[in-house]
Length: 488
Image (cartoon, rainbow, N blue to C red):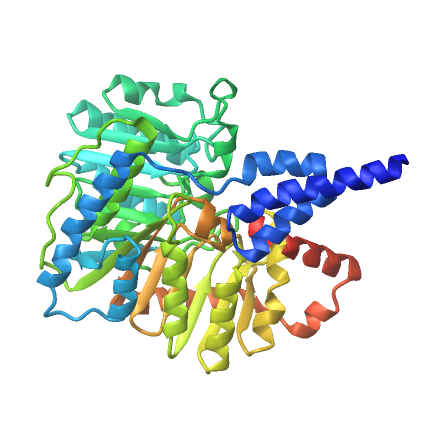
């Protein structure tokens, strides 16, 4: 028997054994094939990549599930209390509830922030007036101007007796040292890391499961989420206070400084924040294994106060139903007039791709704004491979050129807006822990649509003819990147 025969047999056995294991995980067909191809072509490298990024399930503690279900049951009761106030797209909202998420709850005030300094000023203002607790969870926390200013405010909160809990993702903020927060801990604040990785704990496979959430909850009544981390790239020149807050908090024109990212955050006030507070408390329990605080001070009772409805939707690898993907799919397929999307990373799965194509074919105004170039070249190549699918059915794809656009938003018709942390890619839908706010009503929709139209002024349409004229090397890179879209 020649060495070539032995190598061939070994390769076949390798593919059968590894392939069987991957097939039994019951991933999507595209993801299954992508992993098998990777392991077959690059056995040694493939094993290393799969070890760190392949596993897709993460089991939460039993208490976490029980606590979440109890809170959900309490929240669902409020939907009956508001039955005399029909919610736009009620069937979509109910499907998300059926997937295990909270229903739409009332908000007394909703503000959109399109500028980093304005968003941070709003957060700082809420923290400065906190009376009971401040809860924060961020994927990236950088020790720059913004990070230092926020830390100092949290220290002041803790010193005056306000409970401070800060949860930071270990991978997203792996360069941050705990010493940076020692003054906060000394003042009585609590710090925890989401899925910290250490060789001695043999948990390196957890690197694939990250909290990409950006959450701030103040006194259980004011909540923030969106695309902005705690980083100077969003705007860190004026961290002294709220100088611009009055003029721009409601969505005035964002700064066009090219060094700052274009992003969107949302501030919600009222009993709707109860659902966002619950998401943080579940994550806090997961990270610390300490029983999360409960009671009306942390989870305010549902109220009839407020005319706006917000449904906070969370998803992660611990779920069998990917609620955020369901929300986007349901929103797109139910659209009648427009689907306007902004995302920095566009690597959609087959369901979202077909939903967009179907919407365009039935005459819906489908527009997608992406950055001219993101901070991930591989994702850029994969994204461009999907552009022809949309362009050939009449959808518009536009590249934003003034600066990096990091906003993750969606405008559906005139009554639904989505603002959150999730990108339109497999990682956000299935691997990361994410959260979005679905706002039902025309006021927020109008504001978000106006911001989209402002961004159009700095966006260049992508043409099919230009894609066809790309060099063969680039088109090949895009095609290859697309093969690995399910695992990006």
